[in-house]
Image 1 (spheres, rainbow, N blue to C red):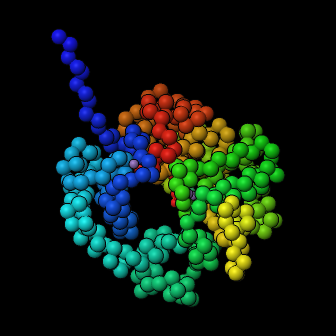
Image 2 (image 1 turned 90 degrees about the vertical axis):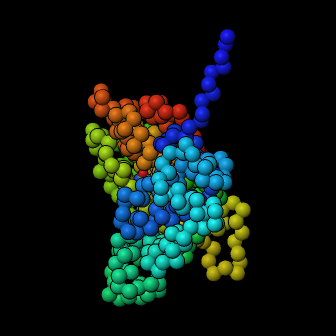
Image 3 (image 1 turned 45 degrees about the horizontal axis):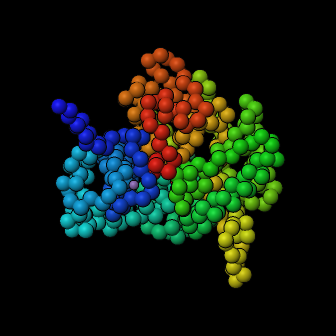
Length: 370
Ligand code: TTP
Ligand code: MN
Ligand code: MN
Ligand code: MN
């Protein structure tokens, strides 16, 4: 007698790089709540519980249906007791008292406000909070405080850069960067990365990768682009970071927010007339807005690693590295993939090559919203 094979129960992986997470999230109420806990841990510098809530939120984001009771979480990985309590409270009563307490906490609200300024991290925000400062006006007018160049720009352009960037604006900026880079070399390629590559309709900035085919020629690229943007009168702020990349260095073991490629963090002036579908308001006092733009220029041979690293999401990146290390004995970062078993660097021309080296099914950028 033939027996039908047991149909395997579909299991959800503990790694975001083995899940497909689109932007469509039927559990947004739950994931928003868990992310408040993440943010609060980050403000309190308690990294331990932080990753638990991060992973819990990320698992829920990969689901295609809304949880309707706690039993629906059976079999899901990464849901600790604390996360389950929050989920249950919200399903049963519509909100979680722990989350509501944080949201109404003065310290949380103030740190959230202060860190919304470009160049202000949790440490600086905490320092200002301890001085008794509670509003941006109070901070800005406190003559005993010193602001660095980044923070000063953050205050000057606060209103503009707090406003989400649209896809149309990202496209217009892509044209500007492409034209500007072509003055340096006709061989420059530009790729849109970050949240927009994952299909987001809005972003807090626009991220581009620039490459030239000739090895070493990328060294002069961003300085030239910055000079040209300045001479066009559209450079409002620039923070250029020289490359500290070493071809032979092993990928870093811990997740670092910053990589070692040449890069720059910019604020550009985007004229409304350049954005498709955007009307220039005649009554408006100005016909432009300030936008945050990040540019990174890796050597061409490392393009795939850089693209994978800058496409995010941050949780997807964390889990890719954790998976590589714990499940494959490999080290992955934005620069390289290193196999510790054979002590070799694995080459990759495309993101698909990297997933294949890791023995992972390819996950499209729009499925990386973990
Ligand atoms: P962000 O631009 O911060 O985030 P995002 O584009 O996903 O979302 P948003 O719409 O809010 O802008 O970062 C994009 C990716 O770039 C993120 O995965 C982290 C990565 N990154 C590096 O890998 N190295 C770096 O040095 C920097 C600055 C960013
Ligand atoms: Mn989804
Ligand atoms: Mn971005
Ligand atoms: Mn960015």
